[in-house]
Image 1 (cartoon, rainbow, N blue to C red):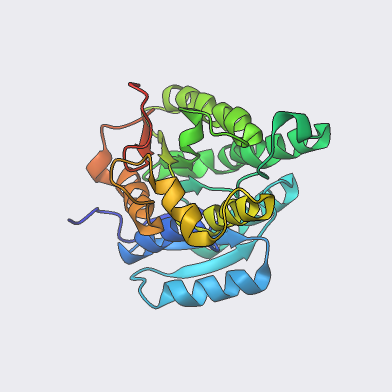
Image 2: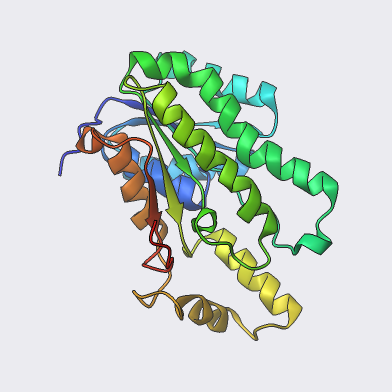
Length: 262
């Protein structure tokens, strides 16, 4: 299926690995010019090289810390300098630490707020004028935890809800020029899930990685965790003209894990 995004420009944040990387890969393979982002310069350079192997469009990397306003300005300015416009904004940031409420310090709350929510606010502020002139889509990668809370992820459960509230508001305020949607990934085999499993091993909850992966799959109707490219394909679809009548939607990509009716 031709998604009709060849020649478009996409800025994908938090994309040197994981779900952001998978989203950038799907967009680049469809012919979009893609800017990827991360804080680790060496990791970012490696990701650019890998993406270029299968990309039909151009791929560049710009290092930026999404918790810093000046870095976001630098990221957007660099994208405009290279490509002249931005048609698609895909926001993705790494998840906060796995913790219980009683073990979470106040500064960690503020850190999660800056990283998870304010990064999206600032990115939209900086890109909306370009998005209005182009194809105009925003896709926020959040978490299935906005529908059903997950044990020991109090920061993600709480703060990511703000991103969904922002998404719904923007889908009305920025219409009809810009469509705004979100994807809610469930358990997907990324570095983040590997980190959560490792933390469970350290706590003595499980004995090894395979046990952790099997444990995550137990309550998933499709009987497995997802793969990053499965999420990336959904993101590319939401950026494309094939989803032209979709805005304000929050799509679970979780193998059926969530039991919520809405």
